[in-house]
Length: 230
Image (cartoon, rainbow, N blue to C red; front, side, top):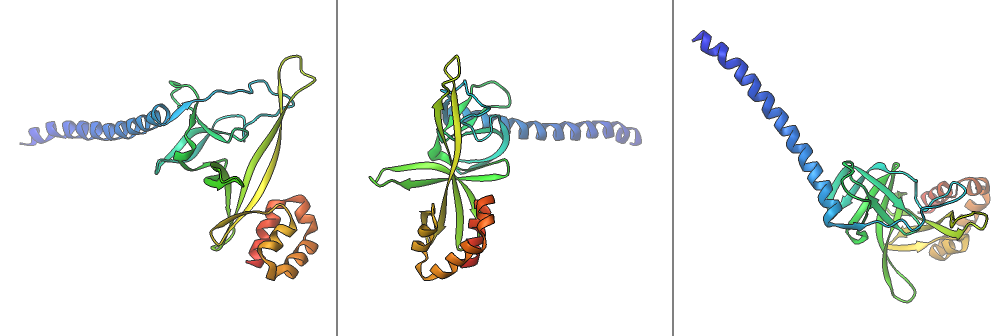
């Protein structure tokens, strides 16, 4: 009986080891299959129209792939290879396996993504001529009542000094406040006063006392302003 027990022990250890490895394999395989399906079934091949750029500029938030978090079709993916094309306002995915080309994810199916510790949320907006469009906005929660959103944008022009067709990109940002279930652009002090007319005096005072902060870091300025008045 002792001999049988001793013989069974290595078999049991081997079986447990195989089971553990199999669990890890299944987990990895599920992850791979999920990412591959994400690329093949829910995206289109990305075509970079601006390969040649000048003055160390690009159309991207950062001109390389980074591991990020992606919520796509109500499913969350971690450590996903993503890159954000700010100029075209599209999110690009590339498999870690290098088996697929760069793919542009369908904006309507993206809920949000986190890149370089910044969260970008898909928001639908309506233009003056009632055209609905979806785009990505950097989200910065101020408090329970309000959220500051930043729309990253780029303009582009052809580099006149380049011997070949090359492009120069310029960054700029547009700021919005989400309050009372409305997204409002805040490009000036008057915009904010129109949103909060009863707080006109407080808003003007805050601008007067925080001019340096406004010039050095407009995002922090807006965050502190709305923390104060809301």
